[in-house]
Amino acid sequence: MKIDVLTLFKDMFNNIFSESIIKRAIDNNLVEINIHNIRDYSKDPHKKVDDTPYGGGPGMVLMCQPIFDAVKSLRTSNSKVILLTPSGTLYKQSLALDLSHEEHLIIICGHYEGFDERIKSICDMEISIGDYVLTGGEIPCMVLIDSITRLIDGVIKKESYQNESFTTNLLDYPTYTKPRVYEDLEVPEVLVSGDHEKINKWRYEQQLKLTEKNRPDLLKGDGSCE
Image (cartoon, rainbow, N blue to C red; front, side, top):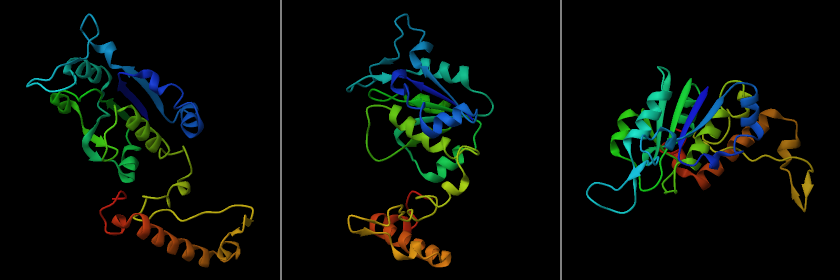
């Protein structure tokens, strides 16, 4: 997979993809990540990329020209262009899995007071990572890349994520490791029983309890796993 990111703040991406799973995916040529400065596509002599909004109002708005030209220069027949915006579709694990099968993603990071509405016309999808507002799209972009890259075939083993939270309509079950007792806190007896049928039953029951406690909306079918 190839991922091109359009941003006004390239330095925010310094080192973020140079560790752990994403670094290994890059080193193994499973994903290519390129960060582009939107200003490089501006035709303004001062590299201006924003202006005041028609009709008045606070802040500055990203202009069409630099982003249109950037997308035109990067887009191919296999590209999917994503605009990060608070008004977009709420991001879910199922969408991350769908996007992990794409060949080329172009992700546009908004900033300032927003962007010219006409920019939506060149996008295939608008995404929001949650019901809150950030200073820009850079951090949401990092969230997308991290969540998508780990699901690309060959990056991690499928069994590592098949039972994770949000893969189904249940949160993940609790896990334990050595020592068996730590500060009077014991590992549940069933996990050291060696009875895998009982262990699987216990884990499923724990998933139900945890989901009902923390995310009952998932059990109703209106949560993040759909």
